[in-house]
Length: 280
Image (cartoon, rainbow, N blue to C red):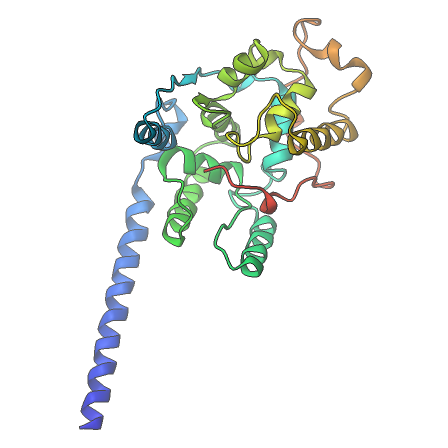
């Protein structure tokens, strides 16, 4: 009798494992073809999954929020803003293939110490995928979905296009999506006219733009923006005494936005992104 029970339990366990493996294979197979990320090469998304999430949130709270967003090509975004965002969010953007494994390792170590599952250290590519297709939840299943789609995005579209998409869909305040809308909202100017200091402040709030204000007395934003700006100076991106001469209002020649010029230095990684509060 004991042998029968043991054999029955083994058989049941085997069936469960097979079913789990089949379910996992189906799950991976589904996200290996859906969504069709190749459309991103030529189509600018009108509404993201994250905007829809915010709309449901506002409806639940009885809030009426007018969405501000306006698409702008990467070539019409201040190179200062591009570099500030990469310094703050993903300093290895041009060299990695969608995942910053050093940042992920640090995030996992912190999660283990804290006994939580936040799993930060997301790259710009991962954040784009979260904004376009997924929910803000941070469970293991969502992270697997994110990883599969990020892998596909990195192999389907160029780095410049990924960056252009991200800067046009990311949240920069309540109802404010994309850098053009954010630039007009906070500084009453187009994104191509942003100065280095303005760019640093906009980049500083990205971990949580509803908690941290671009304009205000937040010590976190002040400290983080100063650090981003200091790194831009150290790398020769900004010469402080002549910063104002490099804006479109004062000089018809904008700083060169050639993609090779936007590649950050390999050293001096400034910020530990695994320690930031995550933007959904």
